[in-house]
Image 1 (tube, rainbow, N blue to C red):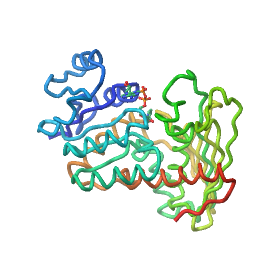
Image 2 (cartoon, rainbow, N blue to C red):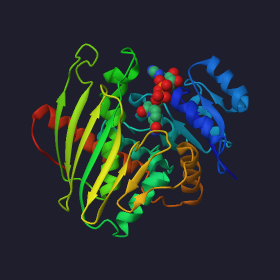
Image 3 (cartoon, rainbow, N blue to C red):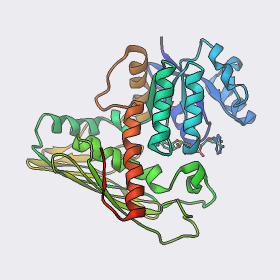
Length: 332
Ligand code: NAD
């Protein structure tokens, strides 16, 4: 039987996931959670969703009595992930939560603990962890084909539009570019280098304080130091386009991806040549793989569990601390 999924938050990314799931072999969209009745009606006809699997935020807790839904996929704004995930866990449902998993590591840990207590799985929507070109570089690194890893560069950014959107609202976004797009460089540095950073330095610059209010970062440059001595140098920004690039340098070769994390196709090459793995819609692969994780206990090559989400949040906390103090922050 397939993994039966309800999507909470019927916005642009929720729609992308729903469309991608049409091609899934093991995951099926069967339910929705929304505060907007018109969206529910629209999704019902578009995705053939039965009335009994439709919830508002008022009725959501009764999902615990619905045996036809396995997992709730939370695609609401960042600031709502914590409460929404814990609510779903308390209703006895597995949870997939979009990145960033929460606003800070403390919130993230509470979500991990709540899911553990409820005996449900918590996964984070890290779609790149299933992307074939990304995984090929990780394989090369693990098999020693690149030799000792020395350096990673991650560039993550785009020029953000509408100043009234939730992504520029501190309460709903938790920050600015770092929460939304810079997290790809943080996460990428970790899976490309294959280690956990032990220190962070960072500098924030702001050219437009009208648009980017206090607590909403426009541009941050940050560096991560790893136990082997490898370092990462990254840029996160809401004010430049064409920034989606990973570069990994090692003793015996290099690997680069550009675009590295966009919806695809991902393009890349290594010192051994072009990467030719086929492009499959990321969210389709992700949902089929997550079905395997939830239903069969399959272990992904790169983790996508709540603990993985918390690791990124600890680094995000440290980057913000480094920006505000100007100090080098040690990570445990
Ligand atoms: P969006 O604004 O298009 O959708 C958010 C949805 O949440 C909307 O339908 C909105 O109505 C709903 N919502 C529920 N309660 C709300 C409230 N109190 N205030 C505002 N909206 C509320 O945003 P999006 O681009 O779909 O992003 C949603 C989440 O998905 C974010 O956490 C984002 O970081 C993540 N995301 C992930 C990827 C990825 O590639 N993994 C890509 C885009 C977005």
